[in-house]
Image (cartoon, rainbow, N blue to C red; front, side):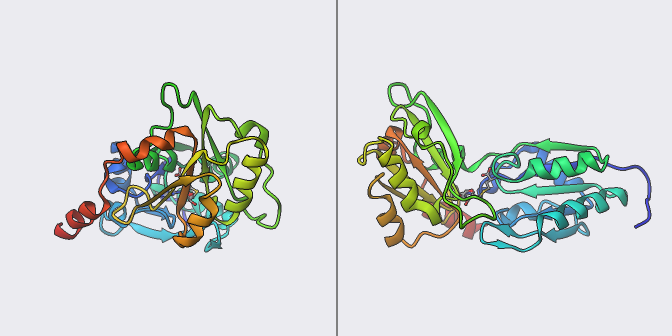
Length: 264
Ligand code: SAH
């Protein structure tokens, strides 16, 4: 591609968890100005309509089980688009620096000498918890929170190498991204390392959207409940005493959100 004018910084942008209103003002501004948008599977449709007519929309379609475009191709695409003088937005679900491989893309840009900026997004942990009525920290219940992945990317055959002894902490909240495939081993390991089987646990499917489903159970009951409900990705687990607040604090009514969507 021939270079036409200056190189613009590539914006690595978080699109939030699903509810399009959880997009940042900065993300909306960059999208409206972009010449090319490279986006992932978990980005809400409504957000894609914030681009200008004529902007090039490129689906990179990554999900834990189906890598539509290999990471190396995405990296070189970003470099190529930027070098051709286009304003490029790399749009990723949630926050780009939380289990989003945004760091790897930033490294490739840095190595290629392409300037970039990173726009944080509302990540699944905080947003799914908020929409399920689960404060991730709460006085007397949780003094901290861990975010972990329940799936080793590209290494699904390997056992999960997590610091189970550290994670089996009754005084902090554990949030597991991409945990569906390994839900049994996650629950087993936590219980074997001392976390009580009756510790409250939640699974949030498609959090913050009109299709949100929340299952509140116990750590021991989580694998069975998740299987019975046939939950598919994207699903997030929240494990810890704070989950007991969900029945009192859950405020989000997905069906009402669906009715609003339909009326618009
Ligand atoms: N960068 C993203 C995470 C990407 S990894 C972020 O910051 O949120 C993909 C995983 O995130 C999914 O498997 C699921 O565990 C979680 N996730 C993302 N969006 C979700 C949603 N709306 N509801 C439930 N889980 C979600």
